[in-house]
Image (cartoon, rainbow, N blue to C red):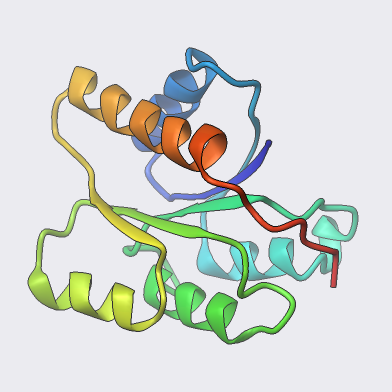
Amino acid sequence: MRVLLVEDSDDDILLTTEALESGKLQVDLHVVKTGTDAMAYLRCEGRYADALRPELILLDLNLPGIDGREVLRRVKDDPHLHTIPVVVMTTSRAEEDVEMAYGLHANCYVTKPVGLDAFIEIVHSIEDFWLTVVRLPNGERP
């Protein structure tokens, strides 16, 4: 299972990586730290020319440059990318962010918990649901 993590926090990258490594499935995790890199990765541009299409995107909203909101909009507006499920994982509890994310067709919205154990539990829950329970489309590279 290929997962693209779009996250600029080194701590959250480490926690997510460790949680996925301790999970039930083998996950091929790729990490980018900016919205610009996320779009280049998804479109197989530049240094990401050989990137494989992820089967799931874990997306932080608060990114430098092109933020997660704009990445979400671009992914869901792109006919080659729009079927990739996007899980928004953010610290924001703001109702306007939740409404915006679902308005842009996020597949789910998860608020990152503060504690280590709770964070790992959330990532395991996402893994259990998105990587074992649901059936995802077989996407083709653009």
